[in-house]
Amino acid sequence: MPRRAAYDEETVEAILDEALVCHLGTVDEAGFPVVIPTLHARVGRHLYLHGSAASRTLREAVRAEVCLTATLLDGLVLARSAFHHSVNYRSVVLFGQAERIETAEGKRRALEAFTEKLVPGRWADVRPPSEAELRGTSVLRLPLEEASAKVRNGGPLDEEADYELPVWAGTIGLRLVAGEPQPDERLAPGVECPSYVDELARARAALQSDRAQDGDTAQA
Image 1: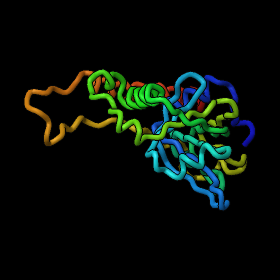
Image 2: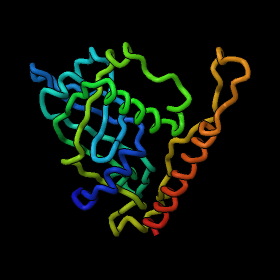
Image 3: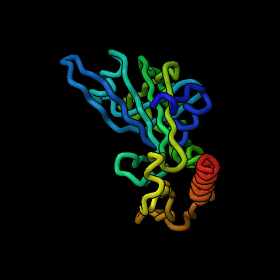
């Protein structure tokens, strides 16, 4: 629905930053459409993607314009009629021409952005990518120029006559939460769980709490 569209940079960037997975759509030279799930990271007004240097999809992504989408599902909306059931969501659609990052330093900075998006503080602790690993990785940069968001929040919107029906209606919130850290079986003796791993669960819980409060406000 057009009324749910948003074109401001703040809304678009916030959705892309919170979403962990996006879907990249390309059309190959034979006209065959391909859509793959992948990770992404935003740096300023560019979105970065990465994968194997042998990836056909990433090769196609620099040949012609691509379409990228990201969606956050916030709740199920149960109406009094089957027709008006819905979901609360936030989504972004991005069109553009991807550019391949060729330099090792450019790839390294992009991989740092991916790592820090998943777990802030992680990059400083781990071994950086080797030259061989960088050569085997393809990194693409996509400008956030032709992007739009759509957002639905609040409760069900029923036909006026249906509000008298004896049917429960309302919303069921959905959220993605971080679980308890599970140490690897081959963890070296004496290695403690870093504080930023514990912070990750708390940060995601706080983010979801803020989103729930926003939804309650919008519904009221």
